[in-house]
Length: 511
Ligand SMILES: Cc1cc2nc3c(=O)[nH]c(=O)nc-3n(C[C@H](O)[C@H](O)[C@H](O)COP(=O)(O)OP(=O)(O)OC[C@H]3O[C@@H](n4cnc5c(N)ncnc54)[C@H](O)[C@@H]3O)c2cc1C
Image (cartoon, rainbow, N blue to C red; front, side, top):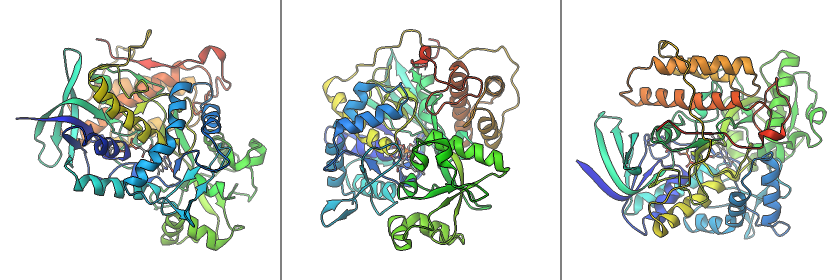
């Protein structure tokens, strides 16, 4: 039996929950999420959410920083919308109960890399995402929104060029059901699980990108994935992010010999853009023959470190490391996808009735590299616009791109299906922080052969593997085509940006 709603929202991170909370005022809403409600990237966000709300700040400065970080590929109109709507969306979050940290009634504003002002709002110190998820999730549960946990969307239904619903599988019974809606909102997050070392949880398998691509939507900027420079690197300890804000507070990166090396790589030292810091760390690790460097906060006030970073302090302390007394071993990890399902500034994809917001979407605000803490902001700014648009112009679509590419066919034999770790190893080694043509060519062929040999997906792990393979292919092909280095995409065989490449790569399945 088909279930019908006005809105189907796929995903229960900040983008999905916020969109659902707005949409419930206009019709019936069903949120489908493949794990528990709080299994998502959002819950792990530490540093905070960017908004030019300080007395020395304004949205023009925020726009300038966003455009500079994006290395020539930011969509200026989308970025303008992002920064100008920031203060209003922060008010919405406060209204929804998010307890941003304040002192004497004044909101506290942290600083992060490549921001020219203090403009990062946080909650619970470094537990911003957990507070957002708890507040929005709690509110959604108390509202008329139908929330279906452990239900994985496995296909978007497209009829006469319009997305009319989804097929979704209850992961506990394997039963598949159809859900129809006037508006289908993809809020499925990124694809960090493509890589061996990642800050993203298990659910982050690029499903929404794969679903949209199969449904005929355009996917763009897939070569641009951000690697976070500092994830905790301790034997036997699950990967855990050590927030950028720790460097913002004055933390110093040291190599195995104890040298503070960042000034050798950038005038901005520890506050250089993430890609610069991540590559500097890779280079230092190679030079010193180790798999880690150290983030040192011993010179900072211990009480302040404990108060500002309670989550990080507790996590490390729980694993036998007092960060106020010992340097923290860190290395880079896959973190955030700038690319995704192409949308216009209203969150419309190129398929009518299908919207996308949050990390799954590519609005163009990040260009080739994201400015820290703009991602949580992007989720709410564009989720709001999706709901507004669904009311004003239901069923429109973003115009298709001239010259969108198809994935090439290599005419290869199918090779036995890989397991997730083999795929992650291939991606880490060949499509990771430092790339080159030979590695990328090897990756594209291997991924194509693996895809060709893949049996039909029938449960959550096999659907996720199939999605990861498709998304990995889109990423590897885009990275191979882009013969330059720009933002987060770095190739040793083309180490500089090239003017002819100030354009985006868009993929669309052959009709
Ligand atoms: C460790 C960490 C720290 C971060 N810190 C910051 C920060 O300080 N500031 C900042 O701005 N950004 C930060 N980010 C990035 C930011 O958290 C994410 O970009 C943002 O939370 C994405 O929100 P989302 O709602 O789009 O996706 P998510 O929060 O990832 O939610 C996606 C949802 O979709 C569901 N889903 C996926 N596929 C399916 C399917 N097939 N069927 C049904 N459901 C599905 C998932 O289960 C999940 O519920 C951080 C990310 C990480 C991992």
